[in-house]
Length: 241
Image (cartoon, rainbow, N blue to C red; front, side):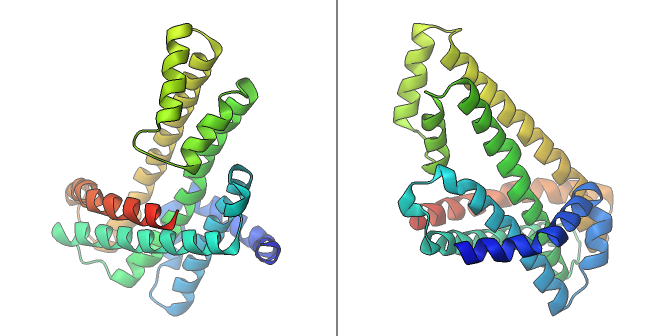
């Protein structure tokens, strides 16, 4: 883990510059870097890899000690890579269905960069900031919220029972107010992430060479294509947890 941290720190200056450029001008950034070629593919995959590694480092304090291992990081890395490739295939199929002809290699490079941004951005604004708020305002509830992230489930009984009881005891008590502030921050973070994804979508339209109307229908198709992707990803996540 120490060697991994040192390697990432050495790449941070270049990564930060690329991250800011990609975040502020996504279409211009990928237009210069998504030409087919092993070098461009390697750079985009490195960007994704560093993004993933940073989230692993930031996540480490939340994880049980047994999870802080090379095996855990490698397993989650493989899971992330498989999920990203499946997502890229879904995006490619969506554009093909509306008459676009994006070259898969260039689309994959583009998707690696997008996934790298989303890995860090969604972690910070949807997970880290809301959890930080909860830890500062309600230390008693914070471990239960953190466990929701560590052990995601469609129904987390322990936390459900806790927040239900808190609402019964005092609807305007600290637990309830902090919980709704947590949810609000997650919603705002999700909206911010979706806004950036909307801005990035134009990069795929440039690759596909289709109209805005077809671009809209491609996004609708992608919405439905992501249902099976989500199902496969969930099974993979549970298998690697």
